[in-house]
Amino acid sequence: MRTVRLVLGDQLTRDLSALRGLDKTQDVVLMAEVREEGTHVRHHKQKIVLIFSAMRHFAEALREEGIEVDYVRLDDPHNTGSLTGELERALRRHKAKQAVMTEPGEWRLRAAFDAWQKAHNGLLEMAEDDRFFASHARFRKWAKGRKSFRMEFFYRELRRETGFLMEGDEPAGGKWNYDSENRKALPKKLALPERLRFPPDETTREAMALVEREFPDHFGTLDRFGWPVTRQEALRALDHFIEEALPFFGDYQDAMRESEAFLFHSLLSTSVNIGLLSPREVCLAAEEAWREGQVPLNAAEGFIRQILGWREYVRGIYWLKMPDYAETNFLDAHEPLPDFYWTGETKMRCLSDVVKQTRDHAYSHHIQRLMVTGNFALLAGIDPKEISEWYLAVYADAFDWVELPNTHGMAIFADGGLLASKPYAASGAYINRMSNFCEGCPYAPKPRAGQEPCPLNALYWAFLVRNRHRLSKNPRLAMPYRTLEKWSPQRRNEIMKDAEATLSRMRRGEL
Ligand code: FAD
Ligand code: DLZ
Image 1 (cartoon, helix red, strand yellow):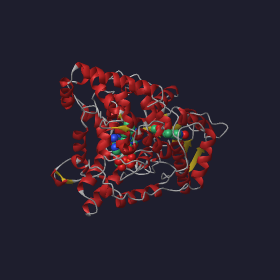
Image 2: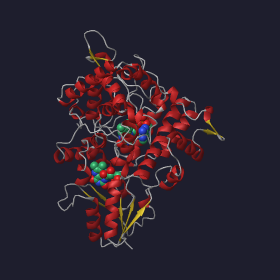
Image 3: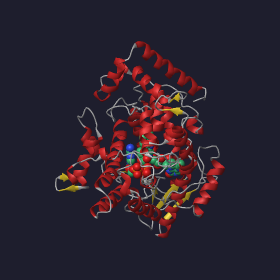
Image 4: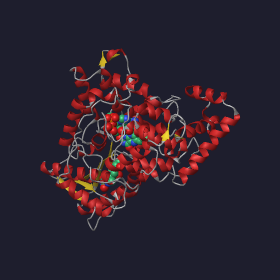
């Protein structure tokens, strides 16, 4: 019987569960560019180009194998604008009585297809997305009965199960985690590697023109688009990373430098998230480089921990806790997102630089997301829904299942500590230690005569005071709360006033 096999924009993997058992003589693969997916949040222009170009290339590769592909373009006059609408239309067009898809990665789409499925009497088979190391059932089994869910313990189980960086039953080198060796500040003279960027080919250029025409007021620029859009390009990007950047990845994972978006990071999240690379092959490549003596253990372990540990773990948390997780607001934060998250127009050098990199590349690395834009949102009490929507919109690698736990759990502590053992709150001293942003900034991280103090300082202490009833019992915050106890009420009042003045300036766009 003829089957319509729906492939979504982040499912561009030849071995996808929805493509298994495909009968070239009967079946048709459906792929659809739809307005709803580009606009439910106003995605960065580069993200839409990436998805459309990679979808078009993938469709072409399937056709070259002799597979029939029904590809609906965004500007098709009959396009319904939604994925369920396109599935319905395709079933009629192909006179098919059954459809197969791999489960969507986002709750929103999963709910839409479940509702569609109900209304159509089980016409659609939903196959598991087995491109992850841990299935939903595997994560639920691990989580069952636990009071807290720490990534580290889940990661160790997956290390044992997969055998990555294991020597018998023991972790390679005797330690599970080399995090403490991942926090070096970047030496001023250390040269950064050239990063492999892929100049847009004709397909990408067509997608760029379409996006400029159809999504003109979306955030971001296209001039520096350089993401891999095919599996071949993604494989080249992986090789290049392993050779040029992985050796230093461990040491400088937490470092930041002004005007440098990439440092030693892999830039592989877009390729892994949309299916051009598998997480397993990426981890295997890092392990092999270590076994061959090309990279130190803290680099290979640090990198594999991000993929095998964090990536799997946040997906597990997402599917365990949705839909309620999206509603969490433990710190009762309600401040609207300041405009400078879109314009970059703030005197705070760190924020301005990271927002501008985000605009130009649809990318900033993890510590910038966590400790610059995330830390400010945490300290200023930005509404979780507003900041989460921002993260989902502005990064080329952003998908709800990975963005939401990182934002609500790691960056702004909206989940009250389900994911992180303490809020990642930091004053200007942290930014100064880990970057050179403060050098050209009009605000001083250490108070100096004639210079305005860094706004993060007052915001940091006011955050602790404001949330004392929620956070002061957290053992990992014992030290700053002890410091606060030593302050006179007058000093505390002054800090609260400074923080309120800072927030007022932020609301007026004067920060
Ligand atoms: P590298 O630093 O080279 O890391 C290697 C790989 O590990 C990444 O490609 C990614 O697949 C994985 N990884 C690393 N950290 C994480 C993490 N915390 N969670 C899940 N996977 C991780 N990542 C996304 O893929 N999509 C998102 O929407 C996203 N939103 C984020 C929002 C916030 C507030 C924060 C703090 C982090 C977010 N991350 C997200 C995680 C991380 O910042 C990105 O994966 C990383 O910056 C991508 O760049 P890279 O490929 O150069 O990563
Ligand atoms: C992000 C995105 C965009 C912009 N456009 C499409 C699209 O037109 N067609 C499609 O199949 N997928 C698109 N995607 C990805 C989905 O919005 C969604 O994020 C993933 O499929 C995860 O569920």
